[in-house]
Image (tube, one colour):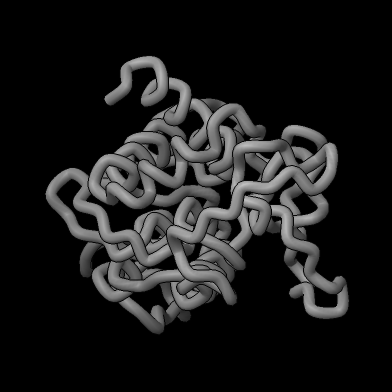
Length: 218
């Protein structure tokens, strides 16, 4: 159950020009703005040909926050968000982040890997504050330092893409939900800065994956 809708519910109805025929009507369900979270873009705020990847319905499966376990390069993560935020944490006792004077870590990397949703996001926020205090702008994977906020589609971006592919391939309901969005333009359900790095634009990564899946009928 995501929000107030059961996953897998499909209601085909043409409601307005922004709600195309052939798709579940509840993807554009009007939610009172008074019920919106401060970060939230509501389903009805989609433009023509668009759909919001709202956590209020099954499209929330496509969110990084969703509890969609994946195995990536030999490690298990309970969500893509857990994978993302774990990279901010020390990889071991000799990691310079672990030995930096005056810095403490509430969690270790394995604990964050097991987190989902807002818990993982909160753990990442704590790590980001530590990064700010240390004056660093990098995260790590297998000991390699990777710029965290960059417009380049470098190693960090490629890791996010590969992990997203793993999530889609290893969770059939995620794959089916993604393909069910057909030719709709996917939009995030939260506000992103206009200069958000490519790795942060999960909706664009998902559309690229969808195109490959649709073309190959994988």
